[in-house]
Length: 324
Image 1 (cartoon, helix red, strand yellow):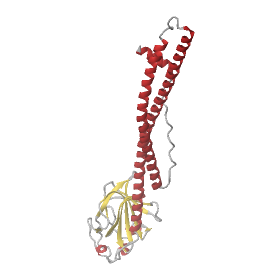
Image 2 (cartoon, helix red, strand yellow; image 1 turned 90 degrees about the horizontal axis):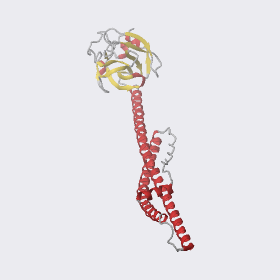
Image 3 (cartoon, one colour; image 1 turned 135 degrees about the vertical axis):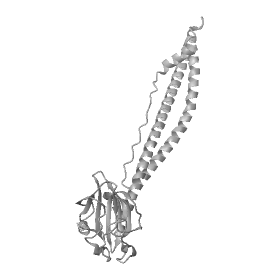
Image 4 (cartoon, helix red, strand yellow; image 1 turned 30 degrees about the horizontal axis):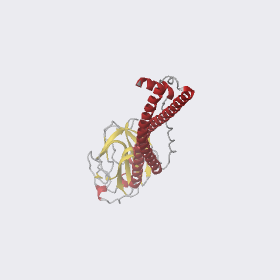
């Protein structure tokens, strides 16, 4: 009889419980302010958390409602089955008894159909909630990835701004010509004996060439400079040395220069060594002429050292200072 009742219920219900997906809420338009964009992401995550909690509570409640409704459907289905399979009324029941029996059957059918509809709606809602919870999980994962990327971008921007400030600051202060480290000569690799003791300004045309051994030299310029520097092409890993004694004012990666070392030589004179593979000095360190500051790198356009001479923040012709 159970199979017969279930078949009867299925025939009366006739409802297809397809998945009813909830439309995703459109993402908020991107903000140009990183802080506002992060705040918007955090609000969206909070909304998803609230939605998830609400859906889980409703889904739990629906579980009880579905179970109760299904039990009622089974009970009424059995009663309806018995009524429809009872056969004709006993002989002598008369027409009135037949009408009463037919009304009882119809009333039982309507109640069973109503319960089947309710169960179908409850189950459809449960499917909808389950789909919503899956979407919330996907959205939260996507938002977490966006936040990670935005945090990384914000940190990169902050780091770049810090490097920019340090790079600019490196050319804004300098020691006098008589500073102790300016008078240090004879670093590793040696320095020409006729280097004047009068400071960097007196060494024009006689600076130590920054790369030992053979190298091809070509005029070049980096973004933000007003005069040409030099590209000194040498094998990757070749030692780069200080052209004159000085103190390290900047040692980090910076924009089009790549890894870069700026030496302060006093009286607002500086040399810039860029496109380095390694940096072997630290900010504030004193180096003598000829001492190692790094090695030649390769930015994908061939191994070379990019070299500048500056007075203040203005670049000056580096070839003239090297005697080329």
